[in-house]
Length: 304
Ligand code: BDR
Ligand code: CA
Image 1 (cartoon, rainbow, N blue to C red):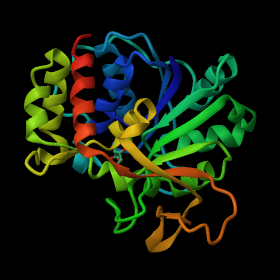
Image 2 (tube, rainbow, N blue to C red):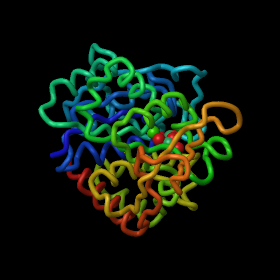
Image 3 (cartoon, protein in one colour):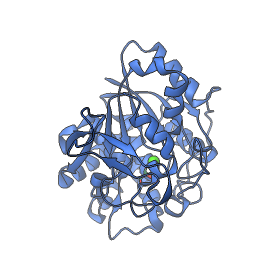
Image 4 (spheres, rainbow, N blue to C red):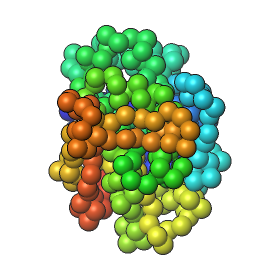
C-alpha cells in the first residue's frame, strides 16, 4: 500500500477523488488536510469530514489555511455550489476535525512514517508551501507530490491560468521550487477527462456512493451534463495508481506571480533555459481508458 496525505478543497471533483482514494486497495490514506479554494475552509473541512464518515472510514481531517499566502481569497462557488458539495443530503455528521492545524498534522504524519509518503494535492498549494517553508526537513519524507493544477494551454479561471495555481500562485511557485519530486496533472489532461451521460447512468446504480456522486453531479457547473463533467482532481488519483493512462514529459515549470499572467504555469519544454527538470507534466491522457477506470473505481467504492 502507498501511504498518502490528501490536501483538498471539496469541491465536487475533490469528492469523487476522495471517494475513490479512500476505497482503493493500494492506497493507505493517512490524513486529509483542507484549504480554502472552491469554497471557504470551514466548508471544505465540513465537506471532507462528511465524506470520510460517509465512506465509513476513520481518517483524521485537519483544517488548513483560510487564505492564500499573500493575496486575497477567491472561490469557485459558481461551479461547485454555495456549500461546495450541494446536491446530496449527507447524514448528520459526528466526527470532528483534529485539534491541530493541517501543516502541523502533516508534519506529524511525515515525521512518524517509516516509509516516504505521497502528497496528493488537489487544491491550492498554500498548506504544502507553508509546510515546506516551516519544516523543510520533512521534504525528505515525501516521495512525490501528485498535484492537480496548472496548464500549458488555456486556463479555466483567467485566459491562461488554472484555478488551483491562480488562487495561490506564490504557494505554487514555492512548491515547484521545493526540490520534491512533482507530477503536474493539469488542465491539458484533466479537461479531456470528462464524465459523459453514459458513465453517469452507470454510476447512478452504484449504491449510496453512486447516488451521492449523481446528486453532486447535478449541481456541478449548474448541471451541464450534456457536454460532460470534467473530473480534474480524479485524474491525480488515477495518475497515482494507474500512471499508464497518461503520457508525461520531464521539464522545468515555474509560476508567474503577477499581472494578467498570475498563476500561469510556464513549462520549459525545450529546456532552453534550464539544465535540470523540476517536474513531470502530464501531456496526454487515454480518455476511453480513463472513463472505464473511473466507472470501475466508483463501482468498487460503491461496495463500501
Ligand atoms: C481545480 O479547481 C477546482 O475548482 C477543482 O476542484 C480542481 O481542483 C480545477 O481547475
Ligand atoms: Ca480541488
